[in-house]
Image (tube, rainbow, N blue to C red; front, side):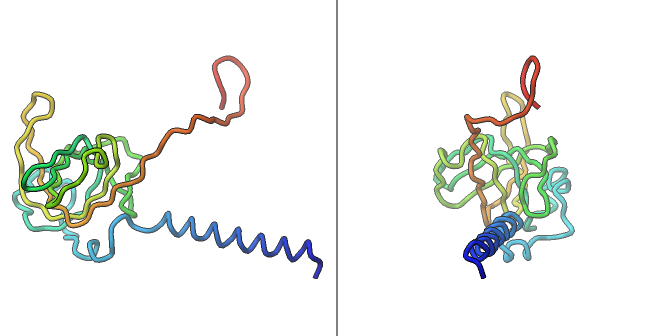
Length: 172
């Protein structure tokens, strides 16, 4: 075999392996199989928002965007704007929300890490309602006790942009 062809075959094999790892990693679920197996399939996210009291003790997977977090002597409370999840426990592209919920985590979580704007998926047990306010309006939050938290990496906007285009005002 010619050295160039051996190099090409080896490079193609390595490239295929790297792409397979990337694709596989992108298809793994945000929470563990153990937590997914504990989920109460008969309870939907809509059910939790309409009547969390009737679903106390049920395990759900829910996610969204963090609106804020605070530490107390009981642990950390995270306020989340719910967003629909896809089959992998990641936010879908839907620009909808059923409302806000509160996650209670028994330990300390740094509020600079669990910060406003971060994306989170939670596997947890429904505990009922918690009263609070959004701005100055009264709000009834579903309260979830965390069983497992998955905080997604922050996506930073790249200062470098690529595009093709001509004309006034930008690119395609």
